[in-house]
Image 1 (cartoon, rainbow, N blue to C red):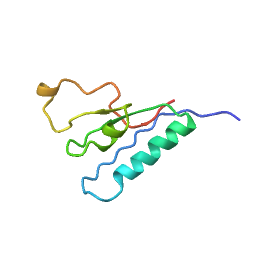
Image 2 (cartoon, rainbow, N blue to C red):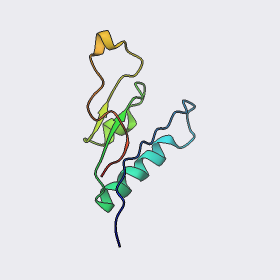
Image 3 (cartoon, rainbow, N blue to C red):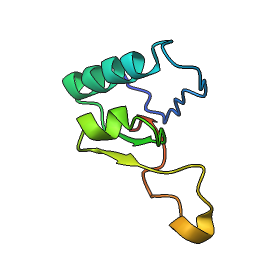
Image 4 (spheres, rainbow, N blue to C red):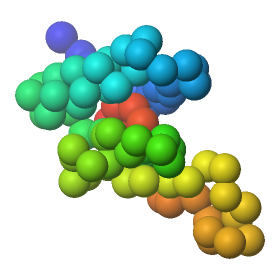
Amino acid sequence: MSQNHSQKFIACLQSTGRVGKSLFAETLIHWLNFAGVPFAGIDSDAEHRTLSSRHQEISFFNAVESPDKKGSVPDNAYFGAIA
């Protein structure tokens, strides 16, 4: 059986609270770790920083700040499985 590796981009774009975004992301992170799937992620929620405060491997990126103030987007500026 051959494996087809591909990159995926997964983003939670909803800003409304209490709809399960962090629960979904937490579950996905734990499953990816369990399955040994390499991934990278960012947390762009400046108010709560749920993922970056719970997971050392998740970076925080302030998406509302001007690039002039913050610099460039981090190299791992995506959340998804990579092969």
